Image (cartoon, rainbow, N blue to C red; front, side, top):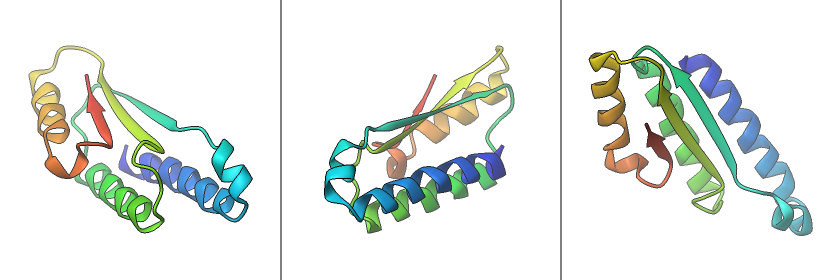
Length: 100
């Protein structure tokens, strides 16, 4: 899951960076939501990918709502539920991540 999430986030951030070169394009850029459907706990690599993307967005001075990630649990595995709760309660992801 982490490698795919990293790839998606990299493409989104690249599009934002390219749009920044033309302020009228950047002003027309709409926020992007990434929805991850999962039946397994997020890997450490997914957490790392999110942290790196968040740092890149902050360095690029992008609006905090430019990108959002939502994890949606499929099924009722309590291990997955607890992992997603921990991820959503991480203070460094407050404006960036939702889990349901």
